[in-house]
Amino acid sequence: MYLGYDAPNNLAYASGPGFAARGAEGLADFTTGLEATNQDAPNITNIGHRYGAVAVAQADQYGSGSSADSVVLIGAPGPGEGIDHANDFRVGEDNVYVLNTDEDPINAAGIAGIHGSDVTDPSFGATRLDAGEGQHMSYFDPQSDAFGNLVEVITGNAQNATPHQ
Image 1 (cartoon, rainbow, N blue to C red):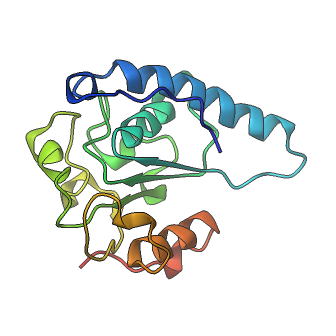
Image 2 (spheres, one colour; image 1 turned 135 degrees about the vertical axis):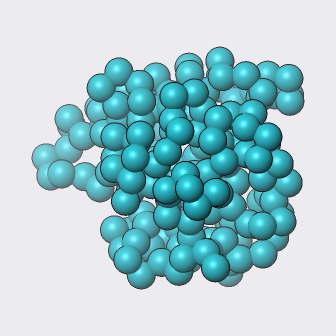
């Protein structure tokens, strides 16, 4: 778990790319280190929630990219600069997942394009998984559909996850 990310503490800071860019650099270096120090090929899933999703998306683009095998954007306001489609991710379009409930107010940021493309739009090309119902923190309730689908991706069983309807 990477906790070296300094998140913005207000909406003014969260509307810009600076915090995400700095967090992306650290995350990319962290996952590269994980891969280098592991004797077996680790399965690395980068997961970002809210503005952290922007940092995770940007880590995929930083330098030679992170060493992640998959990316999960949760309650994401967008992927940030330079990412217009899921196929822009170095992990590959088939390994980009989105968990956003229809009720999450963060969707307004995606629709407005504050942090680039709307990751919930089918034209973005990510695999949108069923996040159930709820607001911005409901994704991490162990009884939620979102949590169950997140577990499937993390454990390498994304084919068993339920798609968004």
